[in-house]
Length: 405
Image (cartoon, rainbow, N blue to C red; front, side):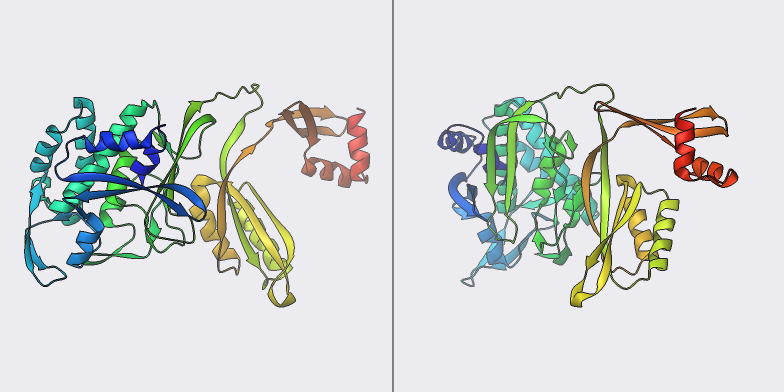
């Protein structure tokens, strides 16, 4: 899918496929075809090794995931004939890479990416990298995938790669050793310290090969930076999900947005949302007080009509991204909700600071906010309330008196 998306960034995709087929990977042929997922048109790339597509070969053997094994084995194909399966070590793979029709830099990139996979398999199986063996078809398929991406990114000459958080899928995946959780252990190991999420789609959405390529090339993970896109590519997978099974790449130039010194974004925050229809006002009020006391940025509720016409509330909590998990636990603890939604968002804020001012009633604190062409001042409510109570005045009278003092 990464290869397919990259080919669409070039004006002549047929020429690009010809160049890939000239890399000299033994027995490997790249084929492209148009594919549509959820109404989006893109490219699907098939890699055939000696005329066999990897997915077809592994399906015939009775397992659907994984390239690494610790020893050779035999199996029967769909006709009942017994075949011996050859396996290659990392040293064998290095020899293949060394003979490719590529410059030394690209060869080194391919070796480094494949090394990430070997290290992950070594960790998962608990054996040295030298003892990790790769199945013949899976080996060549992975070399083809990695070599194509490394070659095409080198051809593009990109200076920086930013990737979104990786959607790894959920559920289980079948492999030679049984059912494994998604993400597969090797994928999870490779993507350590990278932002990943599972979502509701059942299936494996990121393989060890894809994970290794993202880990090697991505300079950072997050929102798309400001840029002027010149080309867009869609690489399509085989399976159909409720969401489009595709990888999108946007190639372009970074744009520096000029901002005044006091007109900057305050970074990303998390909004946590849940529906509540079985709590009293007092219980919900207590929950919001506890959340505020624990340092969330803001809490508010919106009245809503729930199922069966019940009146309810939608609780909104804003918190820092690094506090999300702790805040979710607090929401479940203090409310009766059974589910919390979240979204990551950026925000604009005015520059804020506090100052003390002398008045005829004593010192009070003021909040000053400025930026985006506005400036605001607001006295602290606790100070206003204290003065009003002590002098038998209303809040409006205190505000007016301070304003004219």
